[in-house]
Length: 363
Image 1: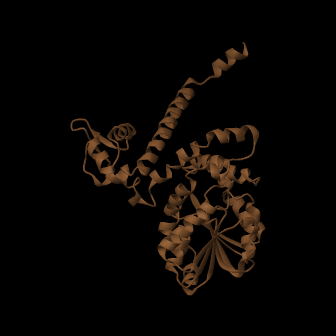
Image 2: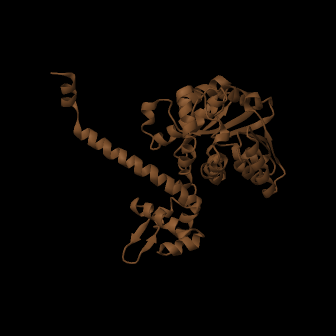
Image 3: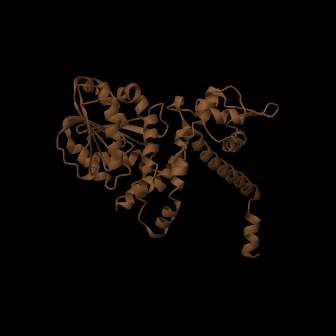
């Protein structure tokens, strides 16, 4: 019997057919992700959540958009079971149960905002292909909407729950902030989390560092709008941070894994803390083992972001390329190597994608 005949005999057609159905679901899901991102950016979900069942012209008028494009978008939403349609009236309706996961009012559960990552990552596919072939990485400057999308993601996972869920999860943090301490946020981005803390804890003093001048300028503008005076921002390379013993609390929200030199950054953070200080780190909820990561509901999404952004921007700076899915096992090891003697890890109910670590210098 030839090898070809043997292979044909062993071929499981039922398994292949099931995989084909899965791939059709992948394609439909990817298409719906693009349309969901547009629904968020255009405000269509927010408008439809406030409307009774309406025709496409009414929806377009209320959103200030072109009806023909809205009608085709609605076609994707109806066939994707996101929007309901009555063929007798020609009316479209966004159910309240769906709006609860798709509108700006739904944060921190607005998955439409998170869908923006799909077109953002797709925009660098050609550059990433070159990296697969030649090595290297894609720089931050290639991701044209990165800071806007990241600010919305941070708004969902950090800002809107910072005061009532994240900080209270670790005893002593709120009391210290109320009394008055020195706080540094590394990789501060647009600075929304830091600005919220600065306005809520006027006795404390806050500093934000980020490598991106664009992000720092946005952070400064946001602080001016809030009118906070206990907050400053600066462009700074975190790996060369020289601030020995200046801070009582350092925070890093989704910022460590894409650093070019994450080990150096963690060591610099440890040096920047006073002996009784703490480091609060939010980072992706991987395990450091791909076979265990299969149990996470969003692992394919997280590995895709890691490959197409986090790992690549680090490699573009000749960095370690740690990637978003470095995982809790690696994170705890690296925190220990950086000089932290005690690490607490928490998962918080609002945030399926991240772990929260509180690290201290002494055990």
